[in-house]
Amino acid sequence: MVVLQVVTATLVSIAMALALAHALEFPGKMRLTEARYRAVQAIYYPGFTIGGAAEPLALLLLLVLIWLTPRGGAAFWLTVAAFIALAAMHATYWLLTHPVNKFWVEGVDMAAAGAKFFRVGATDRSGRAPDWTVLRDRWEYSHIIRAALGLVGQTLLITAIAL
Image 1: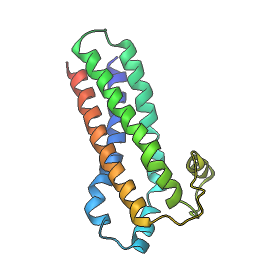
Image 2: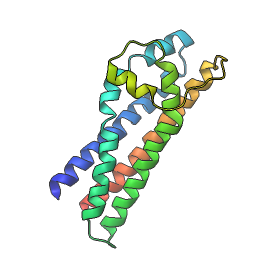
Image 3: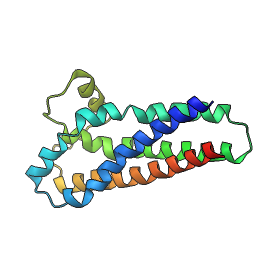
Image 4: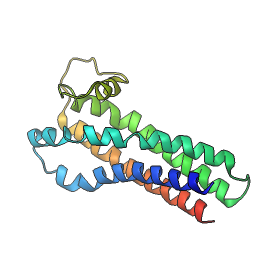
């Protein structure tokens, strides 16, 4: 059980850290021109896509921990709450961040796996060019939300493990 707890906490921490890294860049990135912002956005996808695998794996392992933790105690409920926080973090990605990622990666040369991943989900078919500042703001604020949810989930899980 200890190995499972450590691996789960590590994966939750990686997921939180990736979102936190984006959130910490917020003040600087909000000062960039459109051309510079687009150039900066393109550098994230190779490494962050690989690290992003931690998030669904953490959710899966949190479910296993919930299953194995004795019911009714504080550790059980803290683990359930950690799962809820991480699930909300993941939902925020798919609902707010991913649709914008699809826009930022248009025309970016990437490996087949990355290209397949970014094709998931609906695409805007309105035909009008979106305002880049609206997309920027949505992307940046979604990562602040994700970082906060990740930090809450990480804190709840570590507390549960410490009990």
